[in-house]
Length: 310
Image (tube, rainbow, N blue to C red; front, side):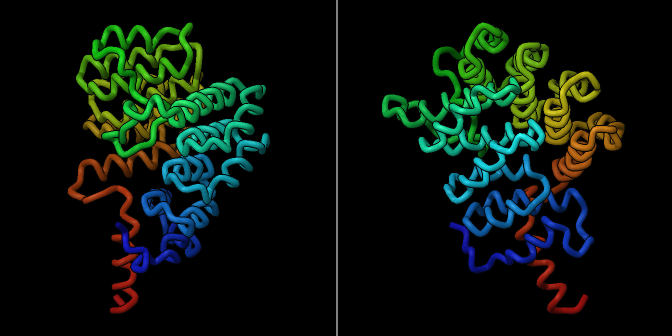
């Protein structure tokens, strides 16, 4: 268990908020994901101050901590927030899996924006699933250190069968997501290419964005052509392009650097920022660094610098 007495929360807050003006965008994201990994109430309070509201919401959903419930509800209710931000708040509620979220999710499952409707319906399905005692045997921790919006399907291990479910727009989104995460668990080149077929879907931007996220987790170079096509498609919604950029940073194969560098000044701010962060992830994946969320390591270096005056 992490010894929180040794955490310099002030340093992490300064890094996240860039209070001194010395922290790059990439360093601020690393601080945020360090706070996610700590996951206590103080970390959530600090994370909530950050400007990257969609990433903050995601991180709160991954902590398993009720302390962020009110923050997520406030973000979902705020129709002035970007749809991507509100989506992330609703998805985080589903990830946390608390029954008390069902009333607000039911309200916004009738939202005017399809991405919000889809996210709320998925979150409701996941909350009902994880709170049903009949499903306890199926629930297990992800090998990818993430709390997913749907559990992997247990019905088949056949890639073609799963792909057909994945790309079937007539199926409920929850069932398609279950096929998606089953393909992730298989993880072969064939499974990756099956997932890439999901990026051709026209029924749900939310679905395409989740495919990008899963491909980023798999880090398989076979996905680079499909992810690159999504990033380069200026008619694609920001939610998908941003996720495609971050996924490319995780894959970190040689050709990725040039692609991300090309779009780091994209007119859409969220896409440009995602490319900058993805370039940092690319650097990390091609280094000998222990972990991406290195805020605790950097706080120790910061303390040493202050102590020695160097």
